[in-house]
Structure formats: C-alpha cells, structure tokens
Image (tube, rainbow, N blue to C red; front, side, top):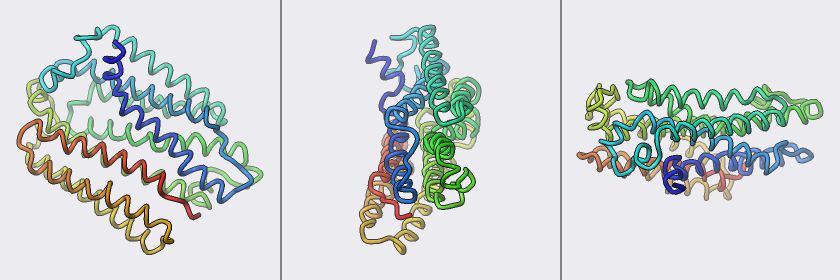
Length: 325
C-alpha cells in the first residue's frame, strides 16, 4: 500500500519541488540578504521554510492523484504496468487522499502566510491546486491549453518561497531598511527577482517541452479516447518541429545568458558556467536528437527523462552560483 501510494504521488518529483523551495532560500535569498543587508536575516527559519516546502509538495501530490483519477482509461492503454488507481487503490480512496493532501497544503500555506504577514498568500497555493484540478478534469486532453496550465503550475514553484519571504522580510525590516515590494523588484534586491523569474521561465518552457514529448509518447491512448492533444491535432511531425524549436530557443537563451555572464564574471564563477554547459545545455542536444529519431512510443521515454534531468540540473545551479550583488 505504501509503495503504491508513493508511486501514485510521484515522490521523486515531490522531492524536486520541495528541494526547489529550500534551495531558493539557502542558495538565492539568504546569500543575497546577507551581502546587501548583513544586519538582517530572512524571516522564515528552517522549520517554517520546510513547512512551506511540504505545503507545495502536498498540493503537487494532490495534483498527481486527481490527474490519475481522471486518466484511468488512457493510462490503461498507454502505461498499463504503471496503473495504480483501480488496481491497488480504489478511485474512492484516491479521491479521499487527494482531498487530504490538498487540505494539508492549504492549511500549511495559511500558517506560513500568516507568519509572513499576510495569510492571503495561501491564494497562490489555491491557484496552483485549481490549475491542477481544471487541467486534469477538463483541459488535459485539449489542444495546447492543458500543456500551458500544467507547465504554469510547475513553474510557479520557483516563485513560491520568493513571494512568501519577500512579504515577510518587508513586514519585518521594511521601515528600518526603507524597502517595499517595488524596491525588491527594481532596487538593490533586483537580482533576487531576476533569478527567480529566470528559474520560473526556464521551468515553464522546459515543462511545455516535456508535456508535448509525453503527448507524443501517449499518442495511441490519447487517440483512442478522442483527445485533442498537439500531436493528434497537428500531427507527430509538426509536434516534433515545435519541440525542436522550443528546445533550441531555450538553449540559445541560456547560451546568451552565459556569454553575458562570462564577460562580467569573476574567476570563481567559471565553475557555474562550466556546470551549466555540461549538465544543462549539452543534454538539451540529446533531447533534440532523441525526439527527431523517435519512431515508437517507447523512444520518447529517454528525451522525456532527459528533460527531467535538465530541470534538476537547472535547479542545482543555485548551489554553485555565488551572488555578487
């Protein structure tokens, strides 16, 4: 039962989401705050940040469950060996678990939001939960909209800690340091905003790419239930062209950013540049190659897995990058 539940909630993906929240604190926000305002400190401590990470993981777990509940028929065709609901866990029990995870995530978000000075920050979690529910219930198999919604929900994880901590920090130190949310976006802390937005855009584009690849992989099952995914509406060839275009766009954007950074970086940041080339940009070429060469459904598994690897590698750049603000 426990093994099946862990598989149902995609525990590895949840660790990535939770780790993103923690890394945003310890590798981005805290180093920048310590440099710019050494007499202050982030308002959310480790336990509170961990609870925020758990709240994100709970919402994401609920999203995976409700998606599988509404996708039983196609999953039985596309990946029968991975079906959990209806085989090991009843749909009714799965719905109860979904509700429990979602409530836990929202309650934790209310608690942390209150600590940050505004309990209404829970609306971010409510938004993500609603996106995941609407996606799985109504638009998962519709043209483009489903891909955009799930990519948006995934990308918002990178902004979660930044939004909660920024408002908490302003509440604690705003009058003393003469800062507000506007000054964080455009003032001395601008680098925090830019880096967080960069991670969000990176995650959004990569999620779109992976979602289209997964649609290519699930073509047979989606076609059998009359889905309107991109590969079914536009065809596999056009879908591959879209994936290649988006992947190249992502690679070119990263290369441009790295070259800009290369011209301004001190010596100790070359490890960051080398790491990004080796484990973020070069694997992108493998995604393109895998998609172009794919002929059968199982051929798309490698580029899909590589996208996940790139996502993790991109997040881990925060451990190498040292801010010079």
